[in-house]
Length: 323
View 1 (cartoon, rainbow, N blue to C red):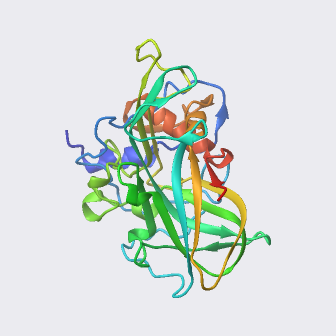
View 2 (view 1 turned 90 degrees about the vertical axis):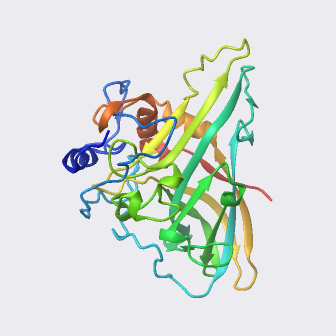
């Protein structure tokens, strides 16, 4: 089914797992939320179609998950922030109950059941290093060869081990942590995937099937109880599809505290744990998201995604792993 541009613009303006007001409310099941993305395939023939407007911004990071606006362009080869610096490598390891979360394999749970992650991917953008003064330093995302990542975005795909390492080119100095955006900036979220290259193409499986824009995070898994049944506990979602909006910046930002120093000569390697427990906690939180309208359909995966998006800044999703 192909929808007209007018329908897509209206749906996108209402949101892609985003709120009319972007203000979280306590309580409520959110069952009246309209919106769903396909759990079997992330791409669609009209995902990402928008009116191309620059959109409006809701300002700085908050509990609602809105990110500070840094520009609405979407350039495949963005201008580098600096020509010199030291590479900081951050190896990302998804964990569940403190153990590595093995992709495509049964992960044993405390209740005797098991969980097999079938799809797990997300975007990281606009990484900043935090200083004790309260200032932050925006850094370039770079590849293994030192070139800038296309569109200033890093794409983590659990099926590709090479994507598990995030690299930035940073100035030497002492820092108190990092802050990163989970998603992509507004300018790219307004573009049709057919006009973009990887990692913002249909191949990413991150296009939003029924409105404009992209998914920021996508998770799908299969739970099996100890007795062999497929009935999962309420705190283990089968799917989480977190998106944003094509009218304002809604990629949530998360801070990860830890003191570290970057020298002027030696690359620094550190490791990050990404807690699946915290993702599930945010996705199943008792947050009313019925003020949201996402496209034309309704599904629990987009409800879970919106709950997670709003709660992410307050969750401890990322933490540094001691060397």
